[in-house]
Image (cartoon, rainbow, N blue to C red):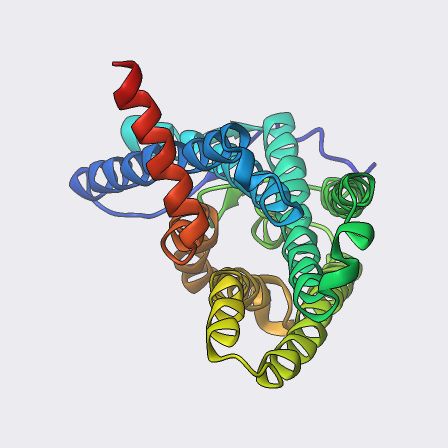
Length: 310
């Protein structure tokens, strides 16, 4: 480990501005976080309770909702405290822990989105073998693999980042402990770390997005060859929500981590990071519920049960 004994805390600069702006950000983050929890917990509950939503597609969607809760919870509550109290300090170890779990959940979500694309490919292109290929055991192994790759990445990124030397000034130009922002606060050379960050994140984005792209090339080709217009419409509708979620997540991830200039524009990066840490976890269950008739029907069935028991 490098010499980091000179400091015990970092200062998360966040968004500079008057108290009114900070309170506005507090209420905005609080609203988005509450909606994120309600929608994602609701999605998980519906999938667990409804027997018609026990397919691999909804197994992965349930895990995606769980990840979105964890992903947002690592960042949002701490940011809300900072906005409300003006206390921007974060202990060195707390910063490392936040970075570790943020990287873990973010990387895992990348791979789960890729696995969900493969699931749709199997369902549409190999429907007769779908239940064999996507067995319960296979789905669990795929989820475990997603977490494994996430764990490898977060261990590498966190250990390398906190092996750097940090000294005064200790300000981090971000509202959470993100790898590029923390690295910029180091007083030792970060060239190797930047190369590793670019290589690892670029590799993850390329591998997962390639899986998604190839899956949807075959999906589109298969759908276009379907004789029934109704079947084509149903197949497209089951994929549309996933395409939207993938586009939002991978687009912002590439902007932040997958290009050489990712560390050169921290102010712009702060705005984008709000989107992928706070907004996307809120939007995912909305995207999947509004674009999915089965989820809407399942919600209706559960509401009828509640009304009946009353």
